[in-house]
Length: 141
Image 1: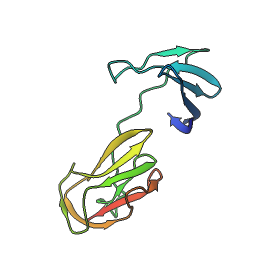
Image 2: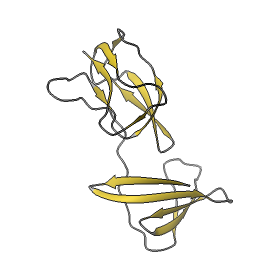
Image 3: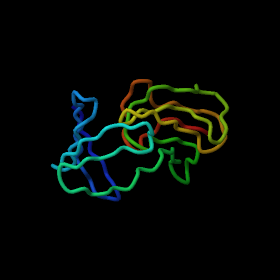
């Protein structure tokens, strides 16, 4: 069983996922349980409601974001998760869009890319580290 807190368009939901013997999962969202099963296409998961269905928008693809005007090369975590791989080291030259870190969130691996070209000045995390939304991952100058 795993429990997550998800925010969709400013509204927070508590989601609990329990795998069932049939290979499906029982997903409870704010007290309403749904049976969810994977299908051949990863793009669609059918939901069989145990109660009323509330449609939620698809989550945007994870993208690294720059720290701010004073530090445009810093890469911050776009979502909370666990660092599974660091693909650069201090002193490496990187290009815009080059993947610098892999971050696992909700059992999905996300490529976190450099926002622009530069030199890696600092790696602020280590493999296996849990990170929070907005946490500094890599500083690029």
